[in-house]
Amino acid sequence: MREGVREKESESFMYIISLQDHFKGKSKELKKIFDCLIREIDSFGRVYVDVVKSAINLGTKYHFAMLYIRKDSIKVEFELDRIIKDVRISKVNKITSHKYLHYVILKEKDDIDKPLIDWLRKAYLLKV
Image (cartoon, rainbow, N blue to C red):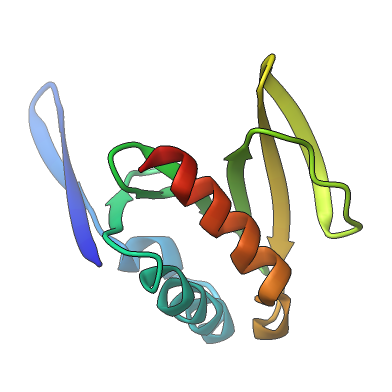
């Protein structure tokens, strides 16, 4: 797993956004959930972490998942070529005629289960 740190220039100054910045002021449990998810995703193959101000993007050649660290949860977004019907999918947006963006909310480590990892693996394979 490669981690990228994004530098952003703004008129007269530059600032660096790090992975740790996303977890400042959040519960330690969220970082544990994130670490557990990354360990599972790392088994897919070559994955990089693209840290930006608003999200943590996971990619291969292209991004296949976006993670948003919230106050008490992690919102996971991933793109598939079909709609997944499951109670854990909080929302689905149609992007194109064959692409659907799915949303899952993680609040505890037990939310990282086989179905979620399978969905993320499929999203990964679509971007390899």
